[in-house]
Image 1 (cartoon, helix red, strand yellow):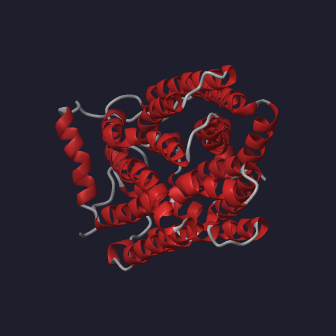
Image 2: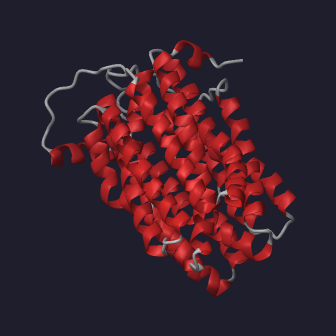
Length: 415
């Protein structure tokens, strides 16, 4: 059965369709890129450098992207970002296919990709509510967006492994370039809700305005800190140490594809649940789910068989999708439309922007104390951060909101 939000919200339907294929392509790239680095003679440290280079731009550009998205038409930002990423993947694919790719090529191109993404992500978070006319559809819309990531995690690994086996890593990146073309075509026809805004303030004042919104809401900055720990400490297990462990102790890309496919299946289960389940305290449920999500590192390093690792990762994935969806929904329900992209940019800067630190530190730490112990400690840190977040009353007791795009938001929660 087609979800009601897709049946009744035409503009969201167009946005959703445009992003679905592109996200599958990105999931292919996540599988392919580490092995592309290794295939051209790169080391484990090189895998970390290339992976980190894609998130470094968030530190420098993420907040700027948020300000820009609150000042100009967000649709234009999305189109420009997709065009840049199309060219990046096209160039990387051609370099690999022709045999001219070097590690620094992939690192530089991944950094450009990340720069474009640092403008795309805050703009998308602010644009999504403008494609919704009925506020109660905001959470289902976020759940469906999460489902595109989950489906990509399920389909992408299989497609990635098949593409590597048939056309190589370069061919897989060329396929991802094509998905961005589809996304651009859909965005060209998008007609989101328009919101009247006053004259923009000076850039610095707008930048400070986003920080003011974050600082004034204890639930925002508390959850941001927990998300930062998750991205900086837990996620490097997925992007750096996981592929290395699969290469050294299992069967490489095939084993990693099995694990990530199971993870995608668990995410889909959570997304389907969130189409109908509206917890009374969304952020309370989100913090509990974050603790479950943080278990994925220790699961990968457990030493179990690939089948058992995949089965347990299925349940960890439920936590990941749940906390991301409820966190995004909480921001969109409570933050004023004219400041939403700026607040979201702090989210991306504090999470994706800090990931390079973990990606760069994870390999030497694993070399020093062992990859299995490193993965265990990653999960311990993530679970502890989620528990501390849940202990904060402003997080536990945040009520549901229903902000119609363009109207005033509820008053900030008491700090």
